[in-house]
Image (cartoon, rainbow, N blue to C red; front, top):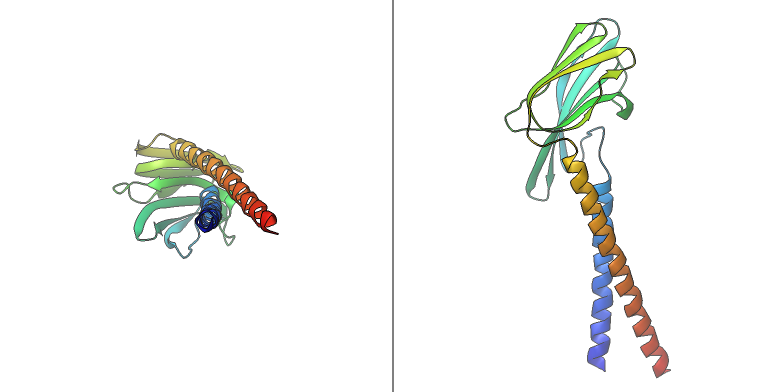
Length: 188
């Protein structure tokens, strides 16, 4: 009987640990840093800003993130907003995973209301707006390594899998706790 009790407590402990890991991964995968800010896992690199001469500015930066000892991808961000305003999610116009050989985006104002963004190669375009306010934006993207939407589809699949694992582990945890309580009640 002691072996059965030990097995139940071990199963309960493992299922609680699995729930914690599943919740951590769900939260981590579900949150996209749309601003590309530096964090404990990401390094921020300012790629400069280009004013249009009438109070607007196009800014760019990238982030290089790591997960543990593994170097993750680099992501580039381009914003258009009033000079002096901070980069915000609503001013983000172009977001892409960088290719190793693509280089940073080139930003050129052809006139005060037309921005040209050029990049020779990208990993995957994650967001691309053709205008913001009165500003029209045109793009010259040489090559896309991954079709648009692939990473979003993969993230959805991972989230669905993690949700199923979480539900299963909660069930295991509840059934194990119920068995432990029944066993304790029989002793009393």
